[in-house]
Length: 163
Image (cartoon, rainbow, N blue to C red; front, side):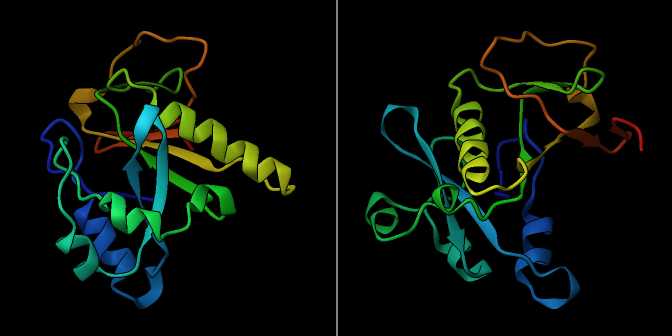
């Protein structure tokens, strides 16, 4: 799963998406978030760069399927086919693998649901990779009981935990 951001606070993932959808040795399936009622987030498959570029943007400046499009698409979370999630944030605490999101809990609820679906199928939890700018790294961030920890965090200055 990956998605694109035009929001200057979060890392732009377009180059990665282009590599993943462009074919060749790194070709992968790409899923993008769809925010729905009551704070529910689904992940829907993007089949091509052209499809992604044609999507309208949401209030965060991210391409997002319309409600009508999403109604006809399978939620990849329920299929438990996602094994890597690139997770954005406002801030990360790489030493303790935590993140500070925007306070809505979209990713925390989604990640918990994804891992439950994977566990029900006998699969390991999805790998959660926090991605951000060096300036987003901090010693600590506020953490609540429902917050999902990252398996690793990466920025231009390093990877945590160190390999």
